[in-house]
Length: 316
Image 1 (cartoon, rainbow, N blue to C red):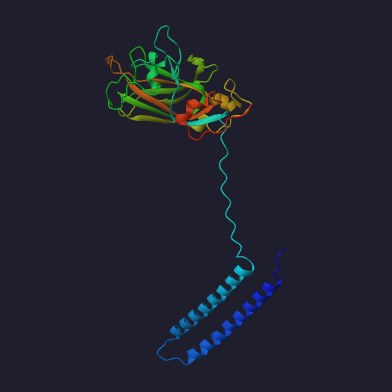
Image 2: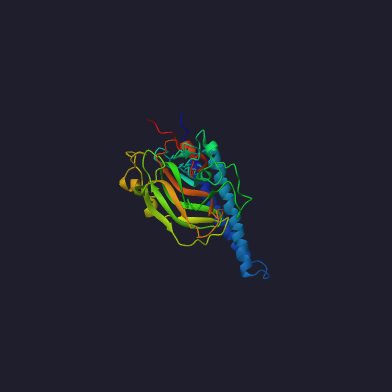
């Protein structure tokens, strides 16, 4: 049965007005007394004393009201808690996965018959991994660590030669690249960096018709040995702000803007001066990328490089 508050509320009103009358009477008495107080007190001292006393009276009145409400009603209604922030919407890995500082995933093999494309997780990857070859740029981890060999020769780097001044690395899924980092171990000299257009299925092909945007073109390189050359790709070239749609796929990314900016690999050409010896290089230790993979077939291969936590597995 609901409690009736008519009686308690009436009592509260009586207490309130009685308290107000008491305060008024108390204030009058204080003012009368203050007029007869010693002349040693200044006007400011008298006013401060009055205000302090009235403040004490008001606080006592407030305390009566608090205790009454606590007894008759239960308590002051608590302030509502602020709403909890909504968690961000889970990412849909079926459309794309953002990655940072990620190496490419495949390059040309070394063992005969020569495989045009060997992936980093292929069963024969480490048997294909040879010193100074392109697969050094996708090995994770490398067998030969070049950390202590900066500005020196190292088996864990790719070395240019008189016959081979270009190296290609590839991605398993179509990607959009926003930034490229190239670590030059010895005799730095990057001339051009060019995108290779995405074509499904990925076979590691590099014919002229698949060569896309040139994102770096220079005749000299001021990078110091052991340092990183960083290339910022303009957003209109990378397509990183375009929205892929569920109607698309790795075979046919959509809309058309996403398809036109989808990359399957990159092609790096170095500057090799005339007359240098066979060991000159240049030497490239690593090539890493920021960007996103479109319609990834296996999200797990991006685990160590993702920008955001994984979303739920989409239902089919």
